[in-house]
Image (cartoon, rainbow, N blue to C red; front, top):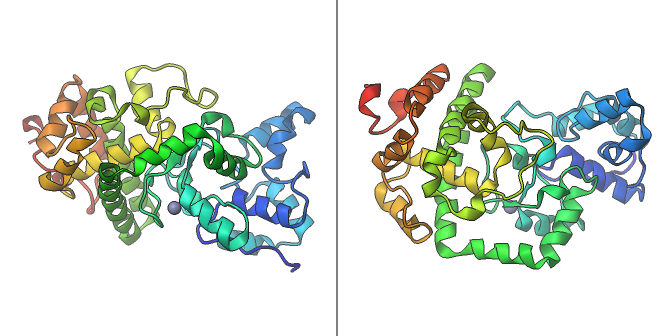
Length: 334
Ligand SMILES: [Zn+2]
């Protein structure tokens, strides 16, 4: 096999493909991988549809990946070894804006180019597992760019708005990241120990259900304004913002910051974060919940939420996570 750069640990397929093309000075070739997104106007309707639905981070079986392999002399076995991932709740590429700047800086130092990680695409992992920080969110306009990683890196390095994001590295913000990271790690450990893919899927469903409930307006008193993006991705979500649509969609279209806070709140309900630890976050938000009772009180404000939540959680009941895993559950659940 001719020389091609090795994938970095956890790197997404689109990021690696772009680095391969950069190495070969061929990054504008329009027949390869995510570059096809840019050339979509030149295609027939059916080709355009196929290319629009192509996700360069997960669609290993796409003919477009086959073309890439042939052009660069890479085997499909090699690609599958690094980039075939188990199924997890994934954010659409059309609204995947989360990134860790420190990870990008690290790969600039080691391989000379910023890279992106596949974990940034997962709804349930808003914390960087390398740096323990909440992922940043780039403007939605970056989504779909063929060189999104490079563009985000440039933007973050030079744009005053992005530089102000560094304010998030304050002491209480780091405390939130640390507690949310604990919840994320606990979830990932439980998932890893699950006996089957079906059980893993239920564990994902359970955590996702908690996050969905905690992202609804009844719990917004626990968030800061910047957690909810002013401009929402429109092209892959319904514009219908009815209760059920919001319940299911918000976790996939909101910021990494909001997902981190919802994980933190889920950690309180699961008893993974105690009152003293949660109390540290009162300096970020005076109304922040410290106990399961506070969180349940917010959810109760939404009529019907508790019964709906109970039904949804019960559908994802496992030996690892069930209704009995939650602390101080409301009277009507007992
Ligand atoms: Zn990182």
